[in-house]
Length: 392
Image 1 (cartoon, rainbow, N blue to C red):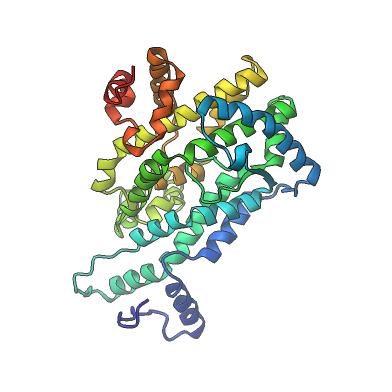
Image 2 (cartoon, rainbow, N blue to C red; image 1 turned 45 degrees about the horizontal axis):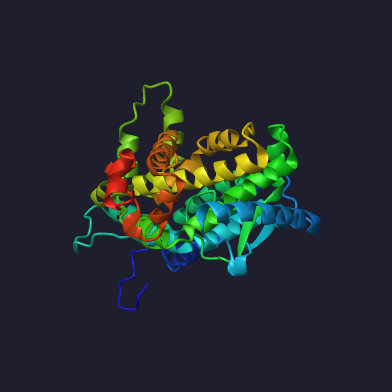
């Protein structure tokens, strides 16, 4: 808080313990990162084991990655690391995955928290003392609420993550790829998939994602659009009260509905989709569909070569992708990254349409610059995209 800004009224000013607690909450910026890390750790581990991988596991993953890397490079013509070698595959725990993800996505979450802490200052003070107290209490508690909500969402994502690119978002750490080896092996066991096959599939997905999401078009196009999306949230302090007001006390399910309201971070944070977000949503959805569709195409192509056409892994993982926990879906909503079944089908249809007309090589220009990413109309009509880029 700047020195020249007025200090908000503290309703706990006469109670030393609460006064100190509320002062600490109001002085840590828009998001409490300590709480975010704590809740992410709790959510990622839960009550199950989170074993540290041994050196032999890391060596085994990197050996398989050598094979996957050659095929990913051949199909995409993109680099997966320096000097014609893939980056290091770092086997890790769920807790460390959560910590790294919070660190990597911190700029996005900071922009989100800043947008949701924005208040329209019209110079008016509520006449109702209770209303004034609640408004200031909400302002003081906002960083803690944001920290707990964001941390819980990342923790839920970590609990079922297999690799670094659980979301199709570029990561700033380009020198390594995180793989949660215990989750990969557990998934293989659950679906009766040979362990090496499962490990290979995950490595193909991670290397393909790493190469594609590091391209110029993603950095200047998709990533920039996601940043605009999170910064365009507008807080609605009345959202919680309106949600409660809509409940019918005579409804036998009223208590369950109240619990649902208070467990929804979107409501508690007052995160209401703005007109600006509504306007950019079609383009963001189109970019996500095309990019995720291309990643899936590369993964399918390489895994068919290495694992055979009968491998059940792709369908199992994609089914799991759309069956995220509620918190996993919330983080997609906050970041504007939609990975629904419909989005997957839309992206796959676009990629298949381009290949049918002009072959796989026609997809390569899509990642050369942001202007080459398809528009909403072009995703639904691949011929329009090919015509605009004059690909024949």
